Image 1: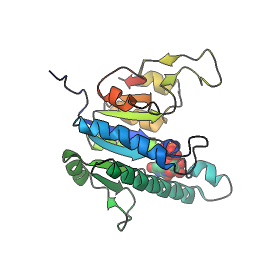
Image 2: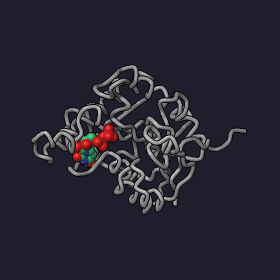
Image 3: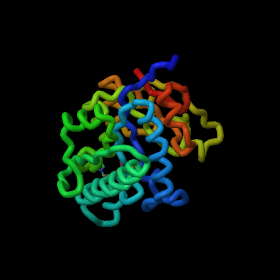
Image 4: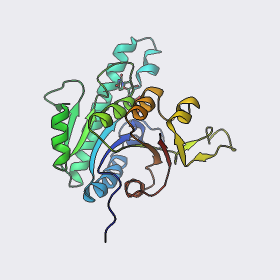
Length: 240
Ligand code: UDP
């Protein structure tokens, strides 16, 4: 007897850094992207529908870049275009791993990717295609975490999986504070009030309002994505 999967359709949020050079987090490192693709392939083989939102921090972050003298809105558009580059790299690696994919973007770049249309995204997912969502929300001043919360809500995903470099949410920065402890479970209220810096407040509130649990976990450990979707308690789960 095979235990039913706890989640049917997931939204996987990858930071841009995860696709970058392991030492610096910059650029695109093909082995890093392939490693992610292998893990995604394993959960697709389990019959789980996967939508992915990719960040762009390996290329450019609007808030940081605009401090060098540019216009914030323009810098944010540059950031969003960076996420499209990442989405294409991710799509390539997933297809090499034997999956079918579609890249859909919040900004129209028709020669490059499909525009995001919820109904079409739903259809791709129900056919077992991995839908990779680029260009964030399409709006400046937002983040790809907010895009992940928004798309998870629109697409009826049962969970938002936030893949990070650390194995969950800590009471303080574990790199700076040796007494920091990891939470296994947190309420949205606690996560928002304590301002735990794992996900911005906009994204957290949206997940809270739509009852979408958020799991923060370390995806650099191969096999962890599969463990999470099978319902193993790793990382930190944020729920109501
Ligand atoms: N961005 C934006 N609107 C969005 C999503 C992203 O303006 O809806 C821009 C913003 O400048 C951001 C950059 O794209 O800094 C890259 O996204 P993010 O910082 O969320 O990437 P991550 O940290 O997840 O790699």
